[in-house]
Length: 202
Image (cartoon, rainbow, N blue to C red):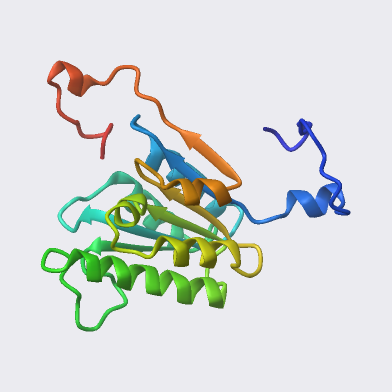
């Protein structure tokens, strides 16, 4: 919806249009279709253009994978033309740890350490936009306490936007989200035996 768009309903919450517009959002991109992370990184581009600090936390992704969005957003974040971009990958053992948690040896511990840092950053209001890429998987696998995650996200201070991606988002997460998008697969090249390709998947 454009800034000039009209909402379908206006709640009786005592807020002005501007106050309501500036509320922080929790967004979830889920479903079996392609494009969940891509859409989240599109949000990161917009946030960067607004001069916001952006924190990207990639759960599950291997340290060996070099995705195009990481390269592009890191270059932009270092350009002094917009906001900063800080990129963390669980597969690399998380960038803030002195003694790396080995995500291959204990991925549950690595996921827990990632979430612990996100909690610290939310409390400190470190970023204006958090991209929690593929975080639905450690939630589904029981590596993270869903109730604690829901409580932390629901009570985060300030104007911090959060977008979470991944298949099978838990109902409790969807319940508290302000925006939920489900990517539905109609057709995919892999259905015809075609693997992912450079410039499309990474």
